[in-house]
Length: 211
Length: 211
Image (cartoon, rainbow over all chains, first blue to last red; front, side):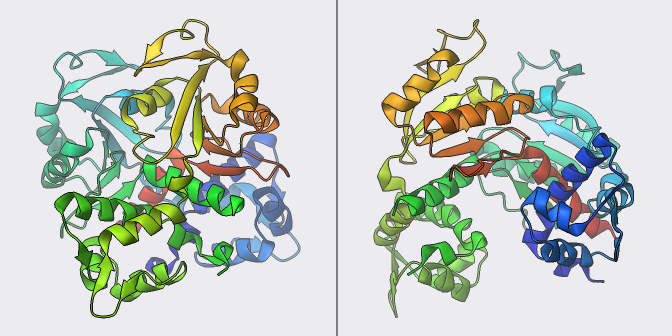
């Protein structure tokens, strides 16, 4: 099976499946049909079967899906059993909010620490983490083989800092700046949270409805 | 032309085109070929032509695209000339970051105000905006015909507050909570910024590379 042929839109539905399965496990449900799963997610049963078929056979005719079995496989497909390590670069409001509200461990990541260039913030504690000096970042990434760096700094510095992180050896960048990061030929994965793109898409749909 | 038939992935590329055109205008460029636009965006020229063809003819054979003309049409397609009104509901770290860093006016929106349930924050000023009491929200939305509400509150209250906003008459919700908002049969548009979904997709691509 060639996973790289999986369409982007299918990959982007996987987290929703995982969340739904977590809800079902919480409620004590042990199995679910593709009809019912589809109803709860606003998708057709055949769409769900097609999505899962990209990765293997997880359901049985007449039984449906075993919730825990499917959850375990989805978590594996999403790499959550790999326990990827992650650091935060930049502890402005967005960075602080992630530290305070985002449970990296629960999702299967190892959060290692947060770095900051602003001297007044270095040494302070946010959500139990002591903020480290950005000057130590390079050595920390090399020593700890950091998988993911969260980039939460000014857009104007984004490419320069991304270049440094890539040179230090991070394998991927979770980009919260509005800048488009060019990873060059490093092979580093960049995943963007571009607020403005999302708002413009909302505006498109709103405008379309009014026409 | 039936705009509702435009694929989601095409719609989600439009903000990137707009940003690139803004860059070109800033640099004083007056025209660009689909070859060059494609090179700068990492897309093929034919993909760009196909994307734009969903909305009309904006280029000329042998000339390419007039940058300002194309920018104006894209802004219209995205509804940015409608000057949609927008309010912020919830002034935690994410909400504060949006107030301080996001230039709603520059993107073509009218930012009207921010609401908060926490009494200590009501009456304080963030980025020049005096935070209003959430109790006044309903009347404010009705009086001002608010188009978009930014939902930046606890996930556990998300659906309840979304129901209230919909009852007050907002036309769309920009959802920063991790909750899936069900707009029922209201016809309200919900656009999500789900941090965890984005991180899990990043994890998928990272895991795939390691296999």
